[in-house]
Each structure stands twice: as C-alpha cells, then as structure tokens.
Image (cartoon, rainbow, N blue to C red; front, side):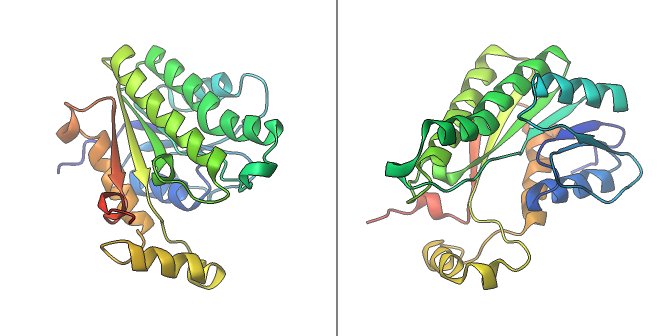
Length: 237
C-alpha cells in the first residue's frame, strides 16, 4: 500500500495512552503531521507533532480541540476518536454522575467532534470502540453501553455526514508494558478464549487504522470493524 499520508494532518484524541501514542508515532513515521489531544499525559516532542492540551470536562472542549488543531496545522484530514473513560463500576452501585462522566468522554465529545469534523473538510473519522459494546463484562455496564452508543454514532454519521467517511474499530485486548504482571488472570482468560490465543500489539492496531483511513478502504462508511483475535466470532456457551 503506497504511503498516502505524507503531508496529511491527523487529529488523535487520547494521544498519550498505549494505542494513542502508537498511532501518533505510526503516522509521524509516514510523514503526516499529528495533532495530539491529551489531558494530563504528554508525548515526547517530535517534528510535526502538535500537542493539544484540552480537558474534555472544560466548556466547548470539542470546539477547542478542532480549532487548536486547525490553528496548529492549517487543516485536519483525518480524525481518530480514541480517548475513552474506562472506569469500572458494579451495576448496582453506579451513580448517575458516574454514567454522565463516562458518556461525556465516550459519546458526547466524540459526537461533537464528528459533527465539527464534517464541517471542517475532514476526509475520514475513525471511532475507536470496544468489543464490550457487544459483550457484557461485570463492572463494565456503563462503559460497554457507551461504546455501543459510539457504534450507533458511527452508523448514523456514515449516513448523514457523507462525503466524510465515518468508521469504527472495535478492539479486543491490546497489550501494554507490564500487563501480564499487573493483570495475570485477565490476560490468561483472554488468551484461553481468543482463537488466536494472544492479545494485540499496539503496532498491529496502528496498521489496521492506516488501512481503514486509506483510499484502499474508500468505499466503506458507517461500518465498525472487529479487531479482536477472533473472539467476537466465538460462541460463549
């Protein structure tokens, strides 16, 4: 696949985490300019990297992110809604404040960003979702519901905001430094359940994102893809 990202501008939210930072590195290496939204995290300085420190809880956060990216880079070609609130709350003890906080980050801000992107001549918007949109896990009821809502936004935006293409990517477990030691029971359960018997590398996520944004995928919109080692194709009984 030819490199078609040189000279393009990519806006990534949640850019300081495992997936977000890898996406930034990947597209910088392809010659793109990256506008990286962070809250409290940071990224090492690099040429063509613009750090946008915008807290999602501030008024008009979505507008500030879009305008800051345009001010820094002159345009936005691609938007990746990657930021997520992954708080764990047992179903019976989740408060309305908990739910509002999770939905604000995972649904409300992405919805605003998608709408603003369409008005800003963005070519493709990619929403990073989770297999928990379709598969319930204890403690993740509100998080899973928020990702299901994000998948619905992807479908609706694909219909209403063309010619901008809107896509989603439902991720399974993505490895990060120390995860095997910090969460051995979860990692082992995942490996025993997934047909490919391992978690994803963040570099693999960046690779599929490159394809989804590319002209090789130009006829797709309103679609969310599973990238989960085959676990979503497996019956749970």
